[in-house]
Length: 586
Image (cartoon, rainbow, N blue to C red):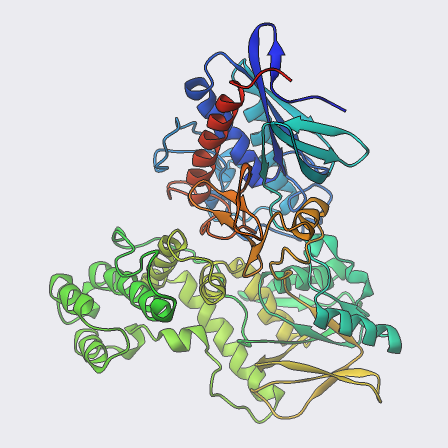
């Protein structure tokens, strides 16, 4: 067994920590450990063991070998792993290039995932190369398969039979896979009984799109980011290509595409990324939402917060489209309850054009209450909807839409783990590049994609051996012998495919909250099923509860929550190792 616990090396105390996961989250933790070590570690030796079976820096999600058709869904200018002057943290700032700066690309460029993976590997390599002399970063291309207590520390079991003993462990595995959910198990069994094709929820790079048959109707459940990835693999990835004629994008089939019938809860895809800047500096937010906002009041408070951000930009960036100044509107808006007649009257008399008023309910569920006579009618509406959305996201006259997204970003660091808020955020702020929606429109025009609308329900017809899909938007049903779950796995600790996490959960040494790993804030220590807090186990990342803002990449100039939390965690880890040095050598 490799020994990495507190001991003596050349008369200098030696401590060790393990970081499980070497993707963006793990990289940030290691970077912050190295940045804080000169202040908190003194001349003591620290070994930082970084454990990941995938390339360090890129990790599983951003590893090389993926098709270039799979892109990052954040612009290159919105991705960094380095701290800048905006980051409010106790540790020292260590600036470095954003992805756009590293590539020398335009800010609006969306990098293929392998390219982003190379940037992340560069960043990790730079962290290792510039580590303080008394910090050794030791890399392990292995999976962590077990974690147990040992006297005075933690034992990490590695795939292949090795083990590490360390003073503390950080779980930073990033986005986790999940075993099929009970409904997916039923779908898999149905598919097996009837010889059908079924693709469960998963990450595009980990799925086999070859199981989706060519030239046949295929039901697609979901229209978010996973849908955009699968769409690229099933069209361009099968020999199709997009061409431009007179400024209009067209799709030339490759001949091996399926016919995709697409529906979801909302019935429309995520909104495209915005291609312009704010006309006025954004206000300080949040103003109405706090960490203590009661759950029953959260939606109204979030709506008011977003409306505040939206109208601030409208009144200050486009004052000719309002009937009063912001100084008069703002106190009246702040005093009014969201959704009341008083609020509606204020907006009506202050914003003359209906098109300039924020209709948040319609924005969130554009198909609600709409019914079409057939799929063709819905398709015509969808074509107009996609066109209008693309035009709006490219026109700075609608910069209040971008302000609303700034409001969402401000709330990510305040709103607790809430499925409704995360869904709203993903739909409005975390959509694909605009070019993906232009491609979707072209695919619909080419007959490769047909929209089913909102409220899709898929049933199993045992007698016919097919799936049948219905929706709230159109009459009738569509039958198919193939079904694709175009979504990422739901967060779950209980069904996680991660062996270390699964073992901890089975022993009751961790617990989940709304599918996320429960940690105590602010120190991010793991919470057991009994409520006990482990002094030497920590977790950070998109699958942990109570850590809003860590699900996406750190954005330059945005005081990124991920970087702040990684810094605080690193300082806590270094304090744990300082305490460990006081123990007698093992």
